[in-house]
Amino acid sequence: MSTTDGSASSLPIFDLAVAADDPDPFRADLLDATHRLGFFYLVGHGIEQRRFDDLIDIARRFFSLSDADKDEISQLRSPQFRGYSRLGGELTNGAVDWREQIDIGPERAAIEGAEGYWHLQGPNLWPSALPELRPALEQWSEDLAAVGRELLGHWAAALGAPMTVFDDAFADRPATLMKVVRYPGSESDRQGVGAHKDSGVLTLLLVEPDTAGLQVEGPDGEWIDVPPRRGAFIVNIGELLEVATGGYLRATRHRVLAPPPGRDRISIPYFLNPGLDAQIPVLELPGELARHSRGVELDPDNPIFNTYGENAWKSRTRAHPDVALRHHGIRPAGAPTSY
Image (cartoon, rainbow, N blue to C red; front, side, top):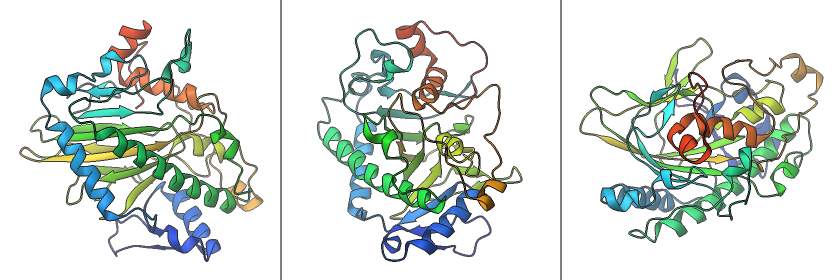
């Protein structure tokens, strides 16, 4: 079940371990909290604090490599939008995000003659100067997939559906995405990441302890600070859960402010996504829940698709126009507005 620490801006804290023995209260609280604000802290997930610390450490070792070593895996080399993006190499809402990062997806062969979102399937790029990065991130991805799928089962049951209702969407080649991000300090560029929603199902976020910057948009449009908690993931709903629930659960806009000069911050989000061609099932909610569904939010500049690949292709080509142009001949058709 959930708790708060007494602060008006605190997100609820959910303990996944207690759900195994007493799932009904956990599910009721989870549904209520994520209907009101699609963010919460998750503990009891079974991943040791040592693993959190080790991953932050290896991320810092990557970002301390020389420019040449990092550029060995430049995203400009990848039609699949994988690899390293330099500072200022990604956009949100058409504005530059002040961060450097690596993008990692499932390790698969590229599809010959791919069209549209099938271009997103392919290999990752790994730095030869830090060979231990690959096994650490691949194991992290495997472990977080299990945590995310367990959470999805609880959501499904809370919404009146079988716990397995989302399984088919993940059965064939799920298209998960992970980022390893460093936000350096800045005097002038406060946009670490501009305001956006995540395009998949849900996000499990590891943030370096004793840092700040993540903000969530509250119901009245106010920005709520979300500090990291040691040993906890920050979890948020993606656009596909909004589609699946007819807006009963709604993806929440969030942003990251760059740290002040002289400081930096490591963040490692894991995006749980189904297969590229999977359509997320739209649930038939029980009467009381259905009456409180708000519908999928309509934004002509940011359409939400129920096929994950369409959502992902929209986001990736807008966020990385240099890769989209170089490898796919895509030029921005207007102001990009999605992450």
